[in-house]
Length: 137
Image (cartoon, rainbow, N blue to C red; front, side, top):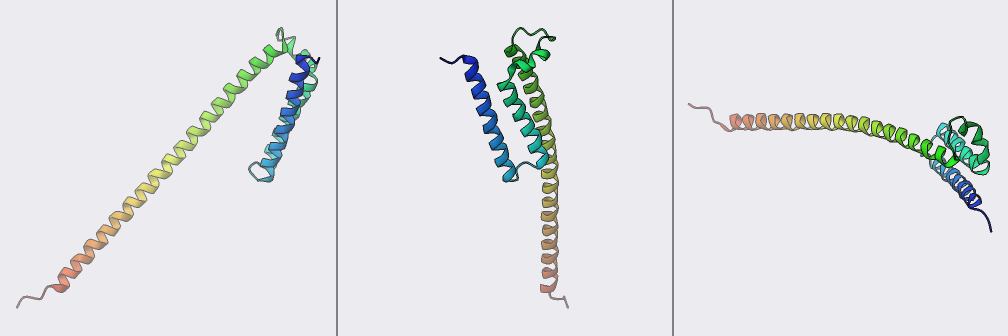
């Protein structure tokens, strides 16, 4: 019977390869550019390498006094999630501000157009009244 470590490594490799494939598909659909593909592929290759050779991280893990590799990955995962969460929050807030500015500008321009149309209609009605009036004798 195979060990649990083998299955974790196997799933890590399968996941890394699948993500490389999906990254490649996103590149072909032009949803990511060449630089982004290189960065993502580097990350997936590192994942596959760590899954295949987990002992390669022992030189990093032991000076940090982690008892197990899993503890290191849990802490690293929290740091990454917090960093990505902050980045995502910042990006969304920036986009919200831009959208709000755009909507305000659009609303003001539409309000000005409506006001201008109303003024033109009033001027036209005034001209029609003046034309339809007969001069008094």
